[in-house]
Length: 228
Length: 228
DNA sequence: ATTCACCGTTGTGTATACAAGATATCAGAG
DNA sequence: CTCTGATATCTTGTATACACAACGGTGAAT
Image (cartoon, rainbow over all chains, first blue to last red; front, side, top):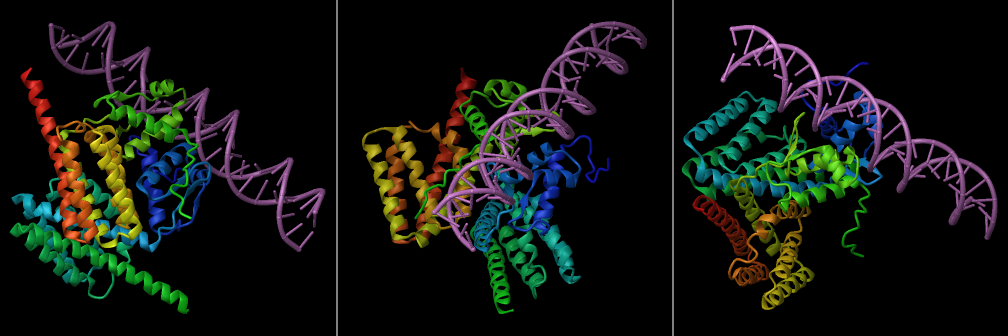
């Protein structure tokens, strides 16, 4: 029996399955509205329905899919407005991280933040958006951790993860890297100075802009669709 | 035209099971550190292991239990500090709700908020903490909804729910109802005036106080334990 | 007496079988 | 031709069976 899914004996298959299915959802293999047939998924991944069900329940809890009793799982059509709402909340969570980080960051964490920041700078200078994108995630993660609120870190990380596909859309917007980096600089300065209000405001704006860019993109796409 | 909640009609046992187990966790029937044996739970509730497992996975996703591969599910020892962190985040989420509500609340929602507020007043005058507690939940829910950010409503509701057991501990603290109601009054005023900064600050303080009271309670309990 | 290895037990993880609800199809009436 | 009702089929939800890893105990060797 071929095993498309490498099963490290120690981990639960449903965990890995969840990631695989999530991957297919965010990459558009299973576009919104798709009905996720359990047996079909089981066949696809070469396992039985049981771990598939468990994976689906996990994804449902994470908000990535919807399970309606007796009617199966579907990829919800997350309206653009819903995504905007999520960016709005993300902005606030990040603002909170920044506020707390400005007050609580340690010397070591300051160094780590600076390092992440410089790495982003290098990616900007090299004009490698993909690399910048990844380093950007680390940068933000550093700020989360500096808040010294592990629950907040969990929440922020989870939402960040969920918004990743929509953020990715903006990767190559003109001057995005440069602008982003400048905003980062202001954020680092504010946190380093210990100015919690400023750090909070800067981060809120930084993320809000992303939400607005997403909204712009959606509007553009809609017009494009309507026009042609 | 508005359907309050289109009855989830949850035919799935695992859903119901999840609530039952959650109940037992938050009420202390399964204290922190308890190992949740799947077969045992299945026997207890008169079902097979399958729905039990699904319920456990859900609870795990919700953060109420921990599942370690091949080692089963346990009720984590949610340190008091973790709960404090959760209150800290809750305060921020509620503050955000208040900020948005002050800007976006409709006339109808203002009426609904006032009604919930007056109901609390009645419970205060009747000196019925249990009733006040329930009405308080409705009051806060009204504010969530007035934010007009459905994702935020979901997040705030979920966290509020998760903090419920810890909030409940403070029910009969001296003068709690009166103090709480006064704070509510200030919040309602700020929202009605459309003063988003004030509403935000008031709500943040209102929730932060609860977190601090919880911390006090924990400290007291610890001293009590150490002393006698 | 202590430690390590082996083995049995226990319980999780997965597969399969069965039951019941939901959807689709088709026949018949209006 | 459309609408309604019954049946057939398909999919989910639950139960049971089986495989294998982890924990604990017993025994022997040092």
